[in-house]
Image (cartoon, rainbow, N blue to C red; front, side, top):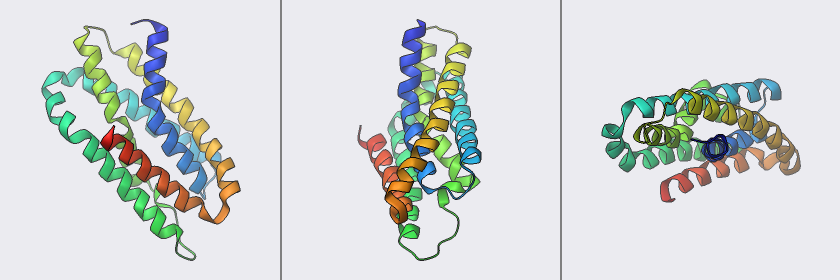
Amino acid sequence: MHSHELLIIAIGLAMDAFAVSVSAGITTRRSLVQTGLMAALVFGGFQGGMAILGWYAGSAVSSFLAGYGPLIAFLILAGIGIKMIYEGRQEGTGESPIETTSALLMMGVATSIDALFAGMGIALLGEPVLIPAIAIGAVTAILSLGGVFAGRGVGHIIGDYAEVAGGVILVGIGLKILFL
């Protein structure tokens, strides 16, 4: 696999994590740096790790997840997004659900299912996985960190509707995964 091909694959795989990170930047009440680093660590780690897991799993698991992976990702993202929309419409809500550790980990899984399949594809090509997994994880981490900061800028523009907008983004990402 050529380096430019690997970079294109890594960027493509990172787009869902980037969009979720924008949502995190819109809704976070924590330090922007803390949120950005957590998003980078979780999303980058899951993307790289799932590529390795997919490489080891091979085609045996592929047939099962090919049918259920998009549904699982949709349910996780839509559930968190709907909760954000609901809480964003309430007065004086507490912590955004995107800021909880469990929600962040679930979104890490949901946004990295495609990396699992990429790892399977790398295995089917007979290629080693370590360098692609590191590249996928690193690109995802960088884009996730940038997404949080980009989301903060959008959050200032939309003000009180930031959490609702973040929830709508998550539901939209879930629908994209489910139907595309």
